[in-house]
Image: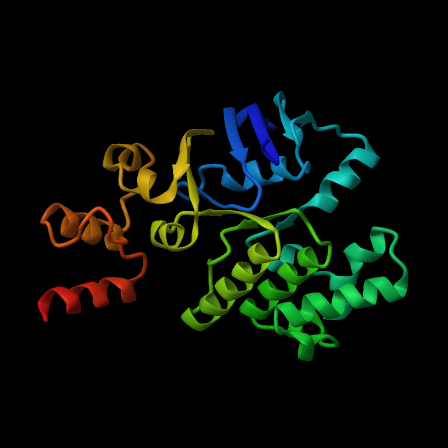
Length: 278
């Protein structure tokens, strides 16, 4: 059974601007799902439906196979299970210190101060930002703010973590660290769903990919299978990852067998090149 499912979601902003058009999406537990599409396609709007912030004008959301409700208590339960980290961390950080910001969610769950304090400590340690606990968020770097926003979501112990363009604005070092954090979260049982227009990142990190454009998902499946389909990628106004193209061409040329693992990163591609040329 899927953990979260969108069925026929339709949504338009005031003025009749269409954002979602009969969208279907399935989120399986324990997987990493990349929602891929060009900037401005409406990916953020989709995430806001997945955690109940927005309510569709038509269609419905399912949680554990049951129709999601929008009463205050139902939304509270929903958001305990489905955390959201926005692209711009400044949209989520508001407290006087990092620790206070991260503690906001756990305290709203009705946890005791001791329980909330323990969750905050665990989340800060997981993101390796314990030393920032008493620092005001406005004094942090962009990458630090992003980690604080993720820590706030992690402290809620969500079943699903939604991330909007998580790699945007990060340098290489910050990106490597973020991926390590997300891998640990998945290993602990958290399902990861993230939007991106970066096909290379999606290929490297996602188990599954959903191609999104013009308000709908028009294909969802295993990352390598979807990203290798040039016609589908063209329809989404995207191009296949270069590393994947290199691997597929090496396979077509007989340099790799069907049993050989395709390269996923630039490092993998360089190792393949060295192997084939030495």
